[in-house]
Length: 276
Image (cartoon, rainbow, N blue to C red; front, top):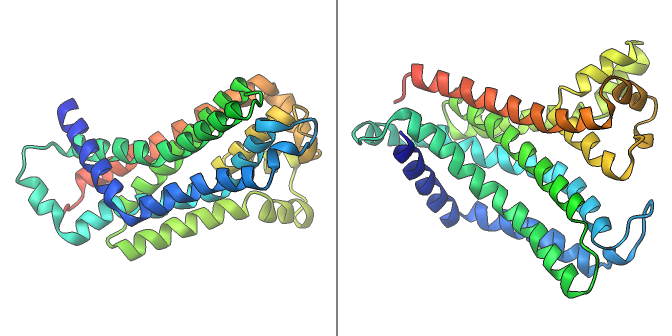
């Protein structure tokens, strides 16, 4: 089974590296870092952060908006695309287990999607070292782990949507819809509910903390704003119930757990469904 998983992962990685979307994806994240250096962001100061720390703060905020939609749009094509192309009939004739194929595809896609994000950060660290800037390794490791959790979460969601959809067009539409709903629930809809419906603040915060994008955003704030002043009164609810360390743990455990649950549900539906 492990052999099948690794072979499927290698095949998915090879296919992704040949695809145009991967080239665009890698250029986007590499280009973001290059532009941030080009515009002299490392020389500015915000809330006491300067140098590479300042760049990483901006980079992580941009990733929050760009990474989920890239992951969803590319991942939802996995199962739906193979089904539409009629690959399953060929797959069933090979000595590859469905379990190894499904989870291997997920593993291969994770490596393909996460690696450019991590390499862009490593390139920024290398350039900062070349320029003689201090490298905040704690902040670097923290943000790398947050991006890993966010990537895995949306990969799991993407695999579930890909299993449910019967065509690439439907899968991509569902992926964009999910991203849009989660994006709206960052502030816009929840703020409206709080003002118009007079919903209790604790309920609003609980709903927000079920949104992986909001969890990621708040966790990214914690490093440069431990009191979460930017969140306003909601910060008291979060810090009173979680604390800083507790919320950091939640920010890692919840997205990974939610993504794994979605991927497992997708596998269950995939295994029981009509493959062709």
